[in-house]
Image 1 (tube, rainbow, N blue to C red):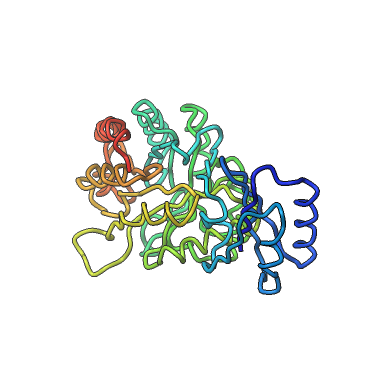
Image 2: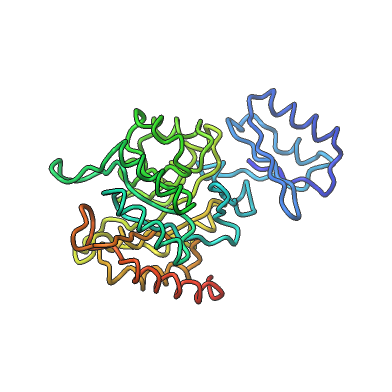
Length: 333
């Protein structure tokens, strides 16, 4: 349920309303918009008398929200959320490119790529220390050593670092990581999401391989219910009958999510297509569709990458992509 207040509501009446609602075990989310103030009522609102609230002098309108996601709902929070990642902002007109290798392989590799993508215009560095792989025999990442190398690359380049967490037991290793990524396979790992709700750190939440947009928003809701509202959503392709591409990139998700939620939405064309030659056109299309940013895999030697080299751009190709994206931004939806 949302309560839309009139301009300049009487402070005492507003305080009395909030106290009464809280006495009914209703949590209140106050959204101060440019033109209106909205109270988002979270909890069992069936016992709340809509007519009684609507009759109050300070109330403009009262509406019941049928969607199960409350905190993430744009109706609760009309203005775009701006997520701050160690001074780098995403959302609300702030477009960012997060770039780097699928997995950290060595000090030389990650530092070279970090400096290269920064020079080309990336705002953040991505790099996998823990890697979820379909085969147990595939490279699983450098684990805690990979985190250490990412921190060295951060010192050299000055770029905030984004890296994927696989399990709650790894959380202590991510203290210096600027943004924690929750991968597609963990999107519905609800115990992990609950704990990340207690972390005062931005979260990059990827859409699951077969998840609906509402399921993605419900996963974001788990994190937000714990008190962490600094979430960036990522469309990274879904599994369909098509086999030429790794996944099917659902670009319609961008404008749909932007209408459903106030959270920033970025696109990962690397994982979505699995083919480096498709990354640039899909990144350009995502930008025009209104995405708040891109997640791009970059490797200095894709042919010999230990993970997902076929979908990685060279630093030179990334620089060309970044230039094209900057030219397209004025035309974004």
